[in-house]
Length: 572
Image (tube, rainbow, N blue to C red; front, side, top):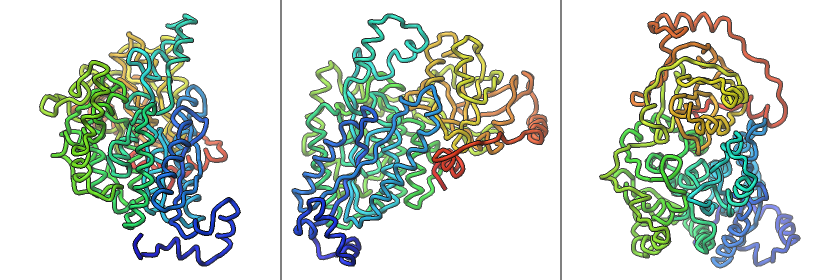
């Protein structure tokens, strides 16, 4: 190791009881002289994305031992949106990101560590870990939890869920088969939802080892990468490379480029700004829109494409996407290998990674081009858009790569609901007509903790009468598995008196994805001038009253202090 003495080691010398506390749990006196590395994971029996993480942490710890360090393992488990569907539990899910981050901060701050390994695989835990890495700013390597095995018939954990829930599938045998095959292994769900997206973002930011995102949990490789992460954190400690040296504005720009190319979840537009905020950099959501206008969307991964996420790794994973888009990326950014992105990609090519993994793809009778389209043949650019207008002056988001082209422009009458439950019930009871523009409001960060709307979006998607004609707009958020014309993150949100709170049934709504517009263009089904609409909305504003909020505990703490969704929905 180098001669530099980190602050952590100097602090440990100040109070000898620290040494006694360590030996009390089995450390030797020799261990006390080694670099001390926190290994914090999201392990728990909370869902398939976390149940296997202890094995990853164990392997990373071996790597730390082998390079002369002393690991110590801590755990803060996470929660799954899948548990929270259909009840108030969903209101706590986004808030969990903040408290996971806070717990890791506590683990990392009370005890002085030399470095840190963070291990997570799912929607809120991955961004929480990256936020914590940014906030704590000691040498850190993030290990993604990997991808779940493919369900039968190239299916995912969402295959048949809505049909079963609606009663369209009633066969006990079919229902039993789904229960046994929907989640055939541990790992993140098999579509480019938020879990898979954020694993990819961790790698694209340079905080995870090259090739580690979406690594199939069934392969030995995931333990190999975990061991190497142990080596990597020791290298970062030796070189004194911090997250602030990696998470630069250029790194965030690179991540947004990759997000556009893979068809990433709209939730990254909450999480990336929150991570950037922790490092001291305010990420403008308009950068997403700017880059999505010109970045080729090259990955054919569900829900924007055809194939499950495991196949993206076999096609070369994020490194192959980066190679394909190298002309759009800053290749000189630093990464957790202690090398630049350019050096990492060259090393992976020379090492034979791309030739080795493609053999798995051959097992499915597929070619790399089936999964990662050649840039020159790509007709769709980007995957998400920031919409603005008199409904969303601060912005709203849509994943247009999952929207049929015929719905990129739509004008229809508003039908307003003040909760997701009301809207869902109306849909499943056949009370929603084709062409309507549905509003679900008071579901933003301060309203209801910003729950996702997967139950409702799937109800629309599986209804042939509605799935190609109805728009959904909300100040809440969506699952990464959402498909169809669904606009979320509307800001300012309803609970603070944003314009979405003033929409009434029959208002004429215009969605224009191509021109990035979201506006009320008429009242009672009749088109009006902008001046007329502004006057009517000013009158409605005078009559509007903020709904009473009766809250307690973590829900109150989060909703009282959350910032706008367009800023990252973090606690200020």
